Length: 199
Length: 118
Image (cartoon, rainbow over all chains, first blue to last red; front, side):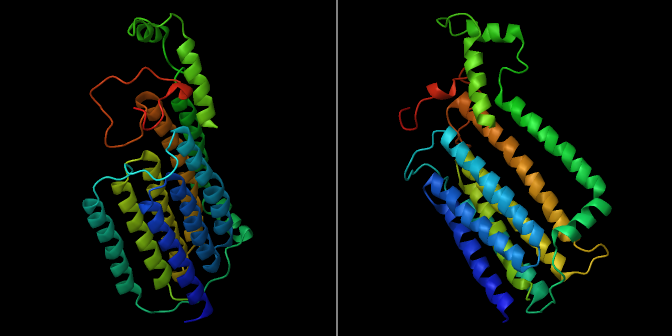
């Protein structure tokens, strides 16, 4: 057991422990905050495993952006503050499948690697990773940029219900409730809510 | 460095993510389970990058970067869908979405009933 192993064991214990809290806590907001701890511990493991750039990207994107987005979604869906009992479904099939997958994969990997040691390679700094990305992986990189753009546009279109609605459609919707005043004011209000959601 | 430690950590994280996706009713918590699974895959990729000497150096780390980008796109679209579901059904419980009835006529976000008042 070297110092690297001890660090990896400690960070892995933190990651798995906070992961357990993410999937079992009864407070919605606490699940998001435990997710921060879990992702931070995984970023620490990346650092120990010499993946320097990936660790900082993980901190920036996951801990910085994704968790903030999740917490925004918790707020926008009017999540109850405090413990709530209706967050879970009956647990035994999920425990069976999740435990089977986790322990099965763990057994497979333990059997494959036993207690062998490897030398850590040179660190994956931004310079080396950048050389690889822009030399060998240019095409996937560009395809990913197109995917990001389409995901961005798709998210905006999804959260703006007034985009793509034909006038006949909105008139039919306004007629059905009967007592609603005519006009497209509800669509406008829903649209402004969608803008807040997209941000 | 003993690669079995991060590998087993990643396997357990993946199992936890599967459990979270199957167990939780709230759609936001389901997305958190998906994030746990994606992180486990990233950890496997990074560890494999240290244990194997590939033809192209650091391929595993480049792949991990790509997976992080995919996860960012996934969470953006997923949360947009969840918010739209909440606006139409006033609930984000994934197991009680009535597929055979018409949705509420898009209630604005400030008129949606609070949880527990329904």
